[in-house]
Image 1 (cartoon, rainbow, N blue to C red):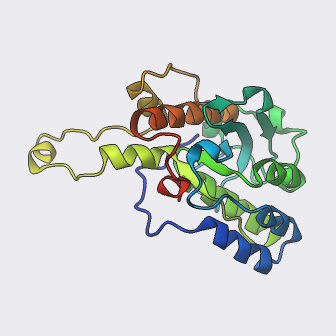
Image 2: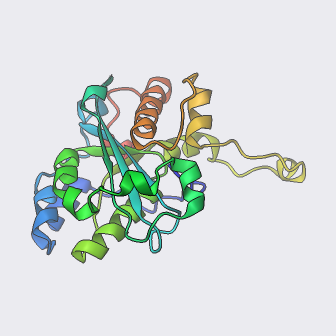
Length: 242
């Protein structure tokens, strides 16, 4: 996963169940209508009973208007269980080509993508996999903006997804208060809320980053550590999603 920066403040927490009902009725794309018709859990559903899907995207850069999704990773999660045997990974053809400097991050080459399908071909299977689930991501801004941009380019309409953002959960703890004048004067760096640094604080092992399935799994493990440390299985999903 490429990192865009600190989490932005959420203006309001939506009722995703109600929002999906509206989208199912109004969305002009039959494919997306089917996804929205699958619905989502009610806001008061306990997180232990909430179906989750960890998601990571690898992209050719940071600007969804100029860059493409080239890899998608999914790992199903329920309660305390990670279903790694059901993980999914897709390579996706880039419409704009691979910038040379992006290969050093995700290690995906032009040769690897030579026979990869366009996202539109993968979309029915991808939507089927995430239907009815809340997505686990680290830095939701990336997944939301890139998926919305990619679908607008192909279907003329974006995708709205409910997420639990593990970066935002770390920001609640480590960015809740602005730095003091003394800290700023000393140029004390803020606590990192990147994925690897956040995992390290919970004693989770290092991993090789920038592979979509590996990063999705790393995000799911981080979320389980956050639940065990600061929340519990009875926490309503509305306290965590955005």
